[in-house]
Amino acid sequence: MDLTPGEKAVLAQIGAMYREAAGDQLLRALTGQWLAAHYGSYSTAYAALVAKGFIQPVNPQKFKLTRMGLSAIGAGPTAAAEQPAPKARPQPATRPKRAVGARRSLMSRFVGSMLGRR
Image 1 (spheres, rainbow, N blue to C red):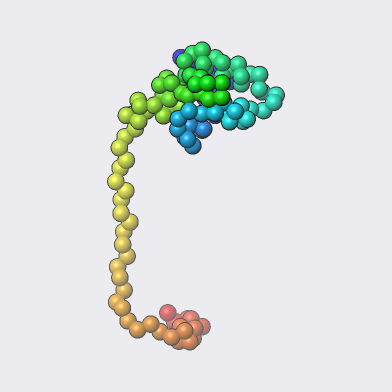
Image 2: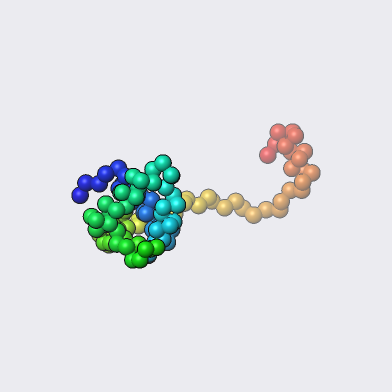
């Protein structure tokens, strides 16, 4: 389904909200992100997303994403099935351990470093 740039922008904002807290979302939190100059176009895009079935209003203050909306933002059950299982991380190479010896004193290390010895 083709989406307008405004609908994509609103879906991206909803996706960010959904990643922070899944479940029902507050309409006020969404509209609070909209600039006053773009409020009209974003509200039209929101209404179009409701009409297309991406969003379902719960009540006048809340809405939720439908399955189609979840898959559009990449959080649906089909998106989880498509992601490959995480690979095992390779273990970093361990350094060979030095033979444990008596540690030199601070003064001997200082003098050694001044003379160029290690």
